[in-house]
Length: 310
Ligand SMILES: [Mg+2]
Image 1 (cartoon, rainbow, N blue to C red):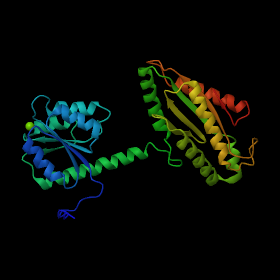
Image 2: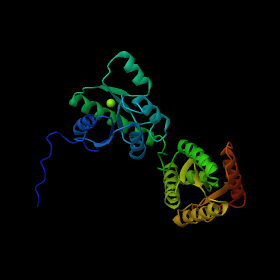
Image 3: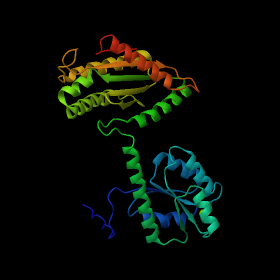
């Protein structure tokens, strides 16, 4: 057995960050890498375009960006990063040998969160990068929590609104259909009245779990729309396919067999679903799709519940 190399004396933090160094000097890249690789996974790029490509594919937590580079300079790279939704939230630290108010202002106005003056001091670089990685992770976690429904763990209304808009644009661009399912739990108010709100919450969690494990096609989303209402976004699904999904959901929720004596249906928890699919027109609005799915849900209700209409 070969001997393991001795571990460095410095502590390695749990959950290493991903750091990208973009600098046209190979000596600088090496120096920064040797300082940062102790705690983080480090990627390096020798020019702007290469840096942009790595940033988009690896989504680092922090980018260290040289200001003075041949071709695309650091300001231009930063502007690109900030205009791309994949990279706009990644904090950028400029590496500059030009220390002065004008340069600092330029760097911050270009969207940098901080800057490091060359020649740098290793421990200062390590500490600043560590702080920014931690802040980035905290922001990511807060953002993640702001998009999830606290009770059921599926997407919340805010995320639904965002994703529906994105799916709408993508399907309009690719000339594909976009389907939406609106559903709610039948006689849910009676369920709450009979069993109390904690049981009502558990019922919603069980229904959400069925939806989450059943709706898994690429790009699809399950969200809690509000109260006992849920919705599924199904990109590239035509009316037939969406109806299949809806009927499957109806069957799966019934199969849970959750007792619901106050229901007029089968004394178990059931759902009603409205299905709509259309080909989004560029410039159109997803509200149209929502309205149609809602109308079909209303139809499912009026035709006796425990069914999908579309
Ligand atoms: Mg340079």
